[in-house]
Image: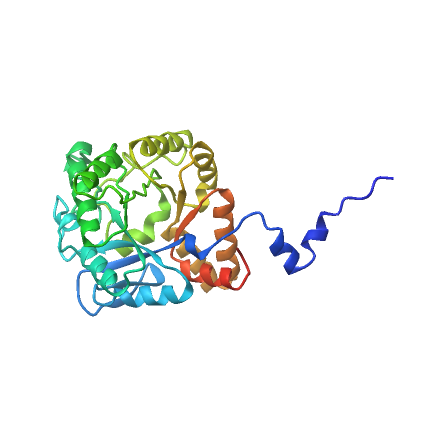
Length: 327
């Protein structure tokens, strides 16, 4: 007589479910985004991202301390300069707002990992990610400025740089510049598959980075495409990227999976502002349980193949891991 198969035996108790989990999470794999504004004594809630804040360099360590207490010790910095111009000089100014933030954190918390987002969109008066020629960024004129930005961030204290402009050959240009400056051991986390997504809306409000005209569909990826994401990721790997990334996360779990299968590099996913804002709105309306939906979403991203998660919910996810609810 054939014995009945009983898969439910391993789901019977919390201890059994924790023992047999296929996907494991760790707070060591979480990165928290920080918005640094060129001002003093500022901690102000971001209207498009409830519960998230703009910090001036003299107060940004408050956010770091809060997340360190939850076990999150990795941060990616975005800047809001006091002045913008067509060439985005604030991005690569040695005393730019991100550079100020990096130095402030590094001085107080030498042990944390700091990542500089390398792009020009927050610093250009037109809001595009590169040097504008006509109605579109000129790829090759933008590359030296991205490289200069990366070097200036590392000089200010960044442990890693993350180019997000989606310019062709940006990884190669940055790798060459870092090596020439003596930073050959500094890794690059490339936004290798960054889609032209409607999920970025709240971030553009937070970073004041929406294009003044047109859109970014000419250089960010078409949401219809997945093979192109694999191609872009393999190109970045060949040019010297140490970590790859898919952005956004939840609507692109299939892309995470495909890129993971195609490369042996660590893979990050960015759970973007629109994902965060939707959960916040649904929570405020009483439609979902915030803790549970955040935890389940994080598990799904790692289950799809991500090794690293950039998220505004880093602290909440770390707490869920520490409590044994996920992880």
